[in-house]
Image (cartoon, rainbow, N blue to C red; front, side):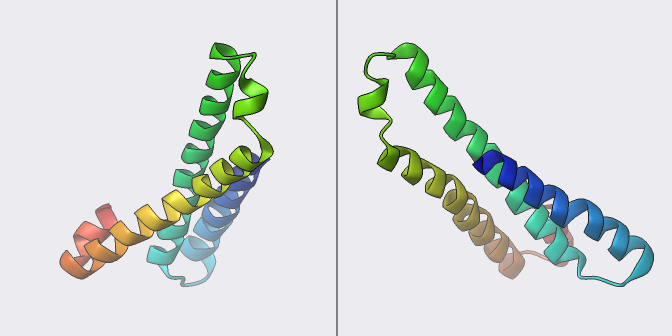
Length: 107
């Protein structure tokens, strides 16, 4: 479910805003790129969480229920949303302050 939400948010923030901002209205390109990159990164971390879940299920099938409790799964999903936010926005802010505008857009 979390992966579907991140993919939906990525598609919602990238494609409609791309066409709207490029052809119809002037928009903030940096904000659009930052949000799209965040949701793409969040989607990637959600895939990693799903991979860990399936790995534990295949390698330790009898211990899966005791390892993957609902608390563990909720914390993994929350971390899969927070990790990209902290890492990406922290790096984006640091690069914004230290580097020129061209370097930030490349990032």
